[in-house]
Amino acid sequence: MINKNYVCIVGGAGHVGLPLGLAISAKGYNVSLIDKNIQNIKKINNAKMPFIEDGCKPLLKKMITKRKISATNNLMTVKKCKYIIICLGTPIDKNFNPDLKNFINFFYKLKKYLSKNHIVIIRSSIYPGVCNKIYSVIKDRCKNLSYCPERIAQGKSIIELPKLSQIVSGVNLKAKKESKKIFIKICKKVIFTKIIEAELIKLFSNTFRYINFSISNQFYMMCLNEGLDFSKIRNLMRDKYERNLNIPKAGFTAGPCLLKDTMQLSSYYKHKFPLCQSAVGINEKLPEFIIKKLSKKYNLRKKTIGILGLAFKAENDDIRDSLSIKLLKLLKSKKIKTLQSDEFYKDKKNIDKNLLIKKSDILIIATPHKAYKNLKISKNKILVDIWGLIESS
Image (cartoon, rainbow, N blue to C red; front, side):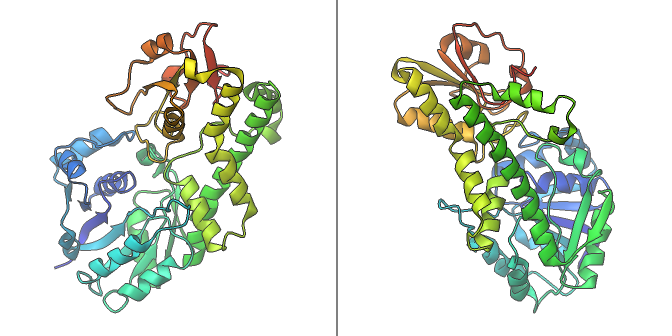
């Protein structure tokens, strides 16, 4: 029997599903986190966070103690839950094209457990038309399909969810009203939209950010070619001049969302999106650009290059689609000696940041962890500070 106070999250042991499940369980719902990752399932059921997410560790312990949340790999669990929230990944292939075959095929598996009383809520990033495809798969069993895209910054879910508005769309009024019941308890405001509007809002938002970062990265490369400091120029641009305040810092623009969603949007428009192609070319080739600039000045085969930071963003342990990792692989492919360190991501090849500084000839701050702001680096070291972390501190 379906219980109206039960929510299940498919992909619930991941970076989107787990924080959402914790937020919902804190509002009195019983939450089942369904996932294939057995290791993460075990950690969650033992009240241990499988990754860094601000504010989640004590909340998970509390919800496990209260028996309001649990993790499982059994998809059949959805049968008892009124609300089924889908937080599965929507990857792109090696050619940057959306690879949604597994995502769509999942709904054929889910379908056999559905009934007319379920509310299916898709939270994954998808391009326009995918919701309609999914509805055509499940509609003979369940007609209540919503699309409510995730909008938080990774690592800040519990902090941001109560402050942000939530986009809610659906194939019918019941789907939208029922979805609102869940989200209005954990967010500031619910905004109803058409499904295609919701799909585009998500993709437009991430694409806008990705392109903006590429502008600063292009400026950074231009300055480097001129022997100038982009961080200094950026600070001067923003000094008592409000129109320039929002210009981002240069840096490795990476992670599992921005590039992927930009390419989903480009694919939807049959790649007739020159801004997208330019942004990808700039952001993805920044590691290669840095190596080329260094190789023109130094014999890198005779240098040791230390990479400070492997995660794709500051104060996080997630290396998915990290350009720091891409930089490391490029250097190794050229037979250049490297050392690596990170404050959060654990790897047996990592060494302490101070030892790395001591042993390296060239230092590259690849991830702007706060711990790197006050590093003591002697003048005889070659420093590549893409983010302007040290110069601007």
